[in-house]
Image (tube, rainbow, N blue to C red; front, side, top):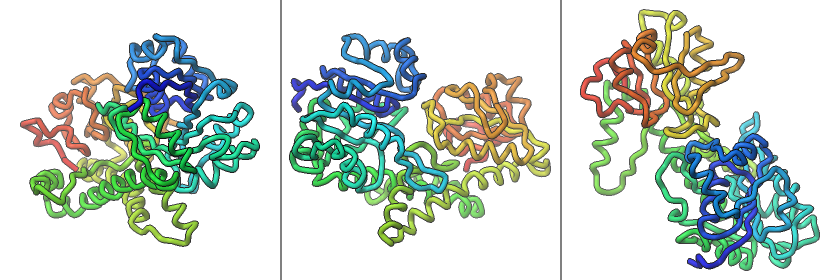
Length: 424
């Protein structure tokens, strides 16, 4: 790895992906210009405050320690950089189809400042063909040709919020539009990552990201689809998984849960599904998995109602634990907790919640505020529903003071006495 190489890098989008990349490239001696159109983020960074659970205030301060990190909402700094890395959201629209407006906006906002010799890399998750079919025409509208004047590549982000993985140790996949584009991207990422994995095209790199997330999506959805039959058989699916995991080959553990959330796993497969339909091809596994995920909030609410009988759901109170899409992060994007809470509220349930990372939550027109987890407060609820298994929650308190605890994450696994726990 050529750690001696240093670049001027413009990173568009300072979320989990962009800020983590900025941190890594700064550590390796490069200069980073961070761009985000959300003024709140820029203001917080200027005040040396963090808006991400993976970054402490000290982490933010360190980003600025060598005067090599420059931030703002405008794109004019693009003309100063060698490399432009786009790390913006790629959500779904109201029809569950790809919404690439942020990618398009980032590219179009950069156009006035592009110059010869620069490399543009897209890291946002997207469908195969995005770089060549969407970004290439936008960039070449300047008169600069890809492969001759400027370079274009795709490198899928592999950030895992809330985990202990060191970003620089995660192999970095790169695929350029031309061999020279690939070589440039490999050289840039090789200055920060221990291993770069070269593939033959941006389409292969784009498909790699979708394969990684589709595999998790399908397998977790399959585990969730087994919950109902295990319920009827009076079998713990969690116990079954641990028993199956003793097989030394051919089995990989995936766990059930209340549903799949976040900005990648429930979204990326639908990008691939959309692309397949454009090609008049079917992907029934993804369609079925998507349906399983869509049905999970209703199933969870049904299990809550069943556990509270003979008391009616509309006469009940439920304490929800965890509303972020995964443990130990402060991100509620596409969190499965939100539709579950919405259905509970629509059923007339009095809902309270606690999440150490989310102080308030708006569900429709209802504003909820996180309550302190005290024995007195917990005792007020008929049921506790664990949706996100944050590490810093006193599960013993919940089990001790709630008549029924519905645990969708096996967060109470280490407790000796959990007779009032229903494990989904």
